[in-house]
Image 1 (cartoon, rainbow, N blue to C red):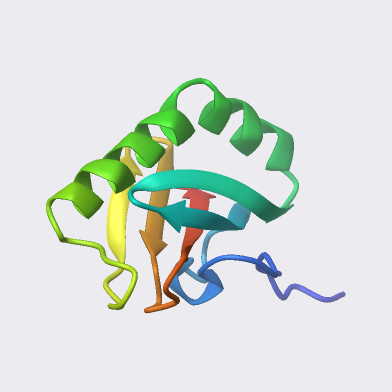
Image 2 (tube, one colour):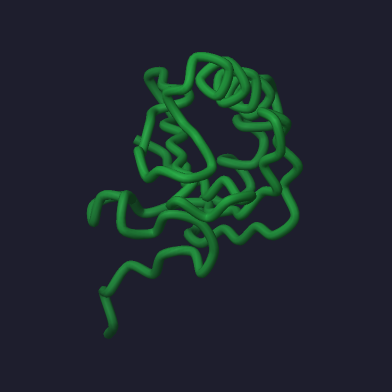
Length: 111
């Protein structure tokens, strides 16, 4: 039996804790603080629950936070600085531009 936990192929897989059994990753176009998710992937038995939780407000709040951090120069297209965009008792969403000059890589997982 393979007990290895898979991680998403998009986003910031290396930020996802090994103990996270359900996670999500994405690459978004990030221009002037605007976030447009173009690729995403989720893994784990509770992927549907994660999607429902994220779509119930946290993903929107995370994108707003990314825009605010861009305006404050805390995340920029030419630097690499991973930040927590959202966290509550159930869920964490983090992101980093990875100095990509136009993308925002994101990761989320259930606690």
